Image (cartoon, helix red, strand yellow):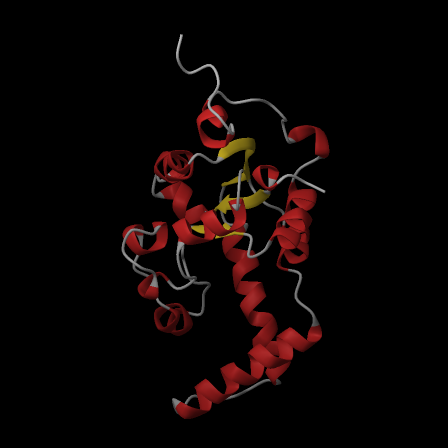
Length: 200
């Protein structure tokens, strides 16, 4: 069984985060918690892998599409295609956005890495993200605005929701040899049981 301090999570700084020069700020926030960076890549994501990354099934498309249809109907907007297509539009918009420019993909390791990163990143919609989170502090997009504009919400960053998802996403974007196992000096102060060796 894996030791809790070895938990890994997956993060992508999206094209809007790269274009707004927030790479260093975002990495610094993760580093300050004591999480350890074990993999990093800078590239333009391909659409085929992005569809695999979002990993949605027909049930998800149908449910999200039905929600969209209800919202459009309530707003007096036309409904001109089946609900499932509106659901697929959500991922189509995400894929188009994510492939529009370079991204930074990373793997972070540490105790409760998935939960710590989620807490730092904030809610999916920037408008409802708490102050102090990356999304709450650095962007102002809303679902309403992105829906009016027919695009994906621009929320700077993606992070895994749970450890099993992180494992799948890491395997999709990184080869095993690209995730580096190494010892970091600060791990002693974070994890050593009795702090042997601090005093000379």
